[in-house]
Every structure is written in structure tokens, then in C-alpha cells.
Image (cartoon, rainbow, N blue to C red; front, side, top):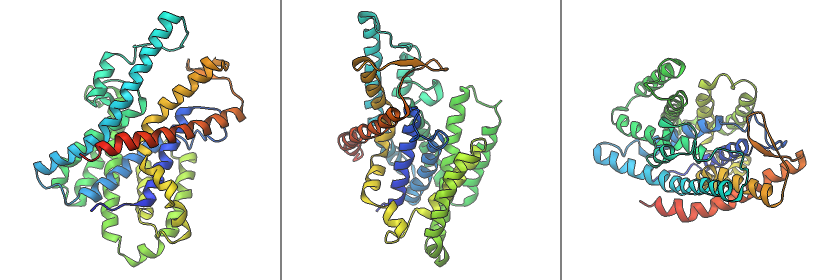
Length: 357
């Protein structure tokens, strides 16, 4: 039976909300652009390595097990991905109709980046390798993650010792820092996939360490105190010095996961982190991650075209709502609220339904 790390569900929720905040891209004190960053995608990679290894370390022994594992991961990721891919395709169609039949200026190119190649790359979960960020742009990470799962499934049969995990990390780090090696893939695609493997295998390493030490009396005695320190250290390090030291991110995240994964739920820290609301947000965090950009697009365009909120074009050529700080903060909170409600239903009717396969 799979073990439920409740504290990690809360961390998963926080990471999804931070990624959403950076994509909302609003001028609000509620959004710290150094903290709310793509760095938390790396947290998901590291967390996946930890949890996947813990749950499947003894279950993948032959090719039949590999087929079952890949099937489980496919149905975990794919249905929600396809659902939002269709929604974003509808957005492109709406923009096309608005421009050509109603003379609406949508201030974005239609079916240029989001073209037929991008669509079919998304269909086959190859978009992180073949195209830049398209359609539901956060989904690039699930493309990288799915093929990392396949790599993991084949390697785990031989992965009985630490040395293979560290060997993978060393090899990936070498290719990650060598910008001249990309095997013909685009620069961003090549780096995205390597980042995923790199973070994932650090998660595997910290999971192995947890399995060895989970009953150790010193680990049990000090894990809550160290977890509290690491929570503050993680936030501090992301904001202050990890911006240009991204190879350290999975190690920092791995330490946090290692000490926090099995918190004493009766402690003050455990009661706060493992409360039911935070844990539920963690349960729907994949839906939050996949839905937030769609929700923001809908709300943004309702305000722009129905309520006639003024807009301006930023330095990158993107149209943004002209809002003061207070209005931006209200919009952030409203976007979070709608995203969570939307995610509740997508989790209930899509994720849970297909996760049974």
C-alpha cells in the first residue's frame, strides 16, 4: 500500500500556487517574483523522484512491471493534459474568429506558435523536445516528466545501489552545463529534459537516504526542528542566491523533502502543515498547475473586452491590464479562488476518473 506523505501534499500545493502566481504576472505585493518562479517546477521533479521511487522501488522487476508502471503514469498525466490542450485549441479558434469576423485586436499571433506541429507534438507528449512553449505552456514539464518516468522504469531494475543514481546525476549535470551538446534538440527543450532527470534523480537519492534513516532515533528526534529551519532556508535561498546556482535547487529541495516528508502530525508544525485544507490543495495541485493559465486567460479577457478595463503593451509585447496595486492584488486572489474551484472539478471528474486505470 502506498504511503501518504501529508506534509509533501502541502508543499506540492504551495509550489503549484507559486508557479501560478508567476504566470498571473500582476504587479501585486502578493506576488514575489523571485519566490514565485519557475524554480518550483524543479521542486515537482525532485518530489516526483522521491515519491515514485518510494512507491515503486520493489514493484518494477521485469518488463511486465515496466508496462504497468508506464500505463499508470500515462493515465495520471495524459487525460488532464488533453483536456486543457483542447481548451487552448478552442482559445486559438476564438481568437481567429474574433480577428477575422469581428475585427477585434487580440494583440497576439494566431496559429503561429500554436500551430499544427505544436498540436501534434502535444498530442504525443513530445512538445518539450520539438517546439517551444505552446498551447498550455506549463505542460512542457509533464512531457519531460513522462519520458523521465520511462527512463526511470528501465534503470530501476539495475538501480539497486546508490552509485547508479549518482552516476545519472553526474552525467546529466555534465550535459546540462555543456551548452554545445544538445543532440539536435532545441536549446530550451534539451535543458528542460535534463533538468527534469537531474531533479528527479536527486529525489531518488534522498528517498534512499530516508529509507535508511527513517527509524533512526536522531532523525526522528530532530526532523521537525530541522524541517522548520529548512523551510525558511529554502525561501531565503531561492530569493537571495539560487537564481544563478540552479544546479543546487534539487539538493535544497531534496533536503527539505527528506526531513519534512514524515512530520509528526501532532506537533505544532505538523498540525499546521498537515491540515486538511492544505493537504486537499496538494491533492488537486496537478489540476491547479494545468488549469491556472486557462483561468487567467478567461478572467483577463472578460475584464478587457466586457468590462473595458484599459490595457498597455509591456516591453515584451504582451498586452496587460492597467491596474493599480490594490486592484492587482484583488485580481490575484480572485484568480486563485477561481483556479481552485475549477481544479476541484477537473480533479473530481478527470483526474480521479482516469487515475483508476
